[in-house]
Length: 346
Image (cartoon, rainbow, N blue to C red):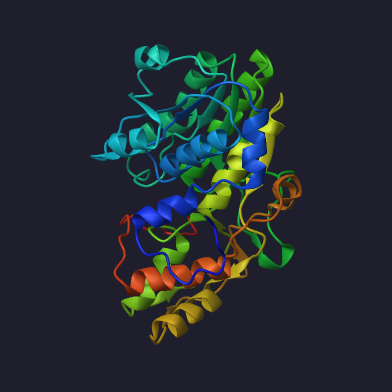
C-alpha cells in the first residue's frame, strides 16, 4: 500500500491507512512476539495508527492476538474508530490506581501516556503524568515486556555541526517538561533494574504527518504568509508511520536495564531551507524572524537505523505531501509543536 511516488494523500482515511501500513520488519516482529499487546495512552496522536499497525501486522503474520487500547478517550468517536479496526478499547484514567489495577494483564505493553503541551502553568500534573505514573505502570505490569516512549527533549541544545546527540551523551533537559521526562526515564530504569522488567525506552523526536508536527506548522505559517522564527534553526523528524514501525520492532530489543534508542529520521533539517521549499511548493513569499544560533535540539538515530533500517518515507516526500495537504485545506489537529522554543516552556 505504501508508495513513495504518490503525489497526494487525498483524505484522512487514506492517511491513516498509510500511517498504519506495516513494513516487512514489523510483520516478522509480530510473528516472533508472543501474546497480546496493551497500548496505554492509545488516544494520543500516535496511538490509533500504532494500534492499527500492530493489528494489521499480526493478521499478516497469521498470529492471533488481542490489541487493547486504554485511554480517557476524550475525543468523541475515537473508540468507535479503534473498534472498527479490531482494537479493543478500555476507558481508563491511568493515574487512578484502582482503574490501572483493573486493566487486563498483557505480556506486551506500549507505554505512550504523557503530558507536554500545557505543561507550563500546570507543572504538578506534568510531573504526575511524566514521572509518577511510570512507576505505577511498571509495578502493575512487572511481568510484561514494556516499550515506553520518551522524548529527545531530555538532551541539551547541541552544535548543529556535531550531528546530533547520541544515546550515550549526558542528559541535560531544559525546562520542567523536559526534566519531568528525564524523571520518567529514571523511574522506568529503576523498576526495570529492581523488578527485572525487560524494557526499551524510545526518545522520539518529532513524528510528523499531514495534520500535525513541525512540517505542518511551517507549511501552515508559510501558506498564511506568517514569518518563521529561526531561533531553533534546525530540527530532526520522522514520518509517523516509520516511528510506529520502529516502536513495534523494539519488542525484539527489550532488556534489563532498558535499551535506549533515539527515534527520528537520518538527516538534520534546516528550518530556513524547509521554509523556502514550502514557499516554492505553495507559491508564497517567505519571511523570517530571529537568527540561527548554531545550536539546536537534535538527536542522532544511527543506532535505531542500524537495528531497523532507514525510514521508508523520506522527509522530502513528507514535505511534498504536507504542502499539498495544507493547500487543499486538509484537517489539522490545531496543536502547534512550538518547535522554535529554546527555553523548554511548552
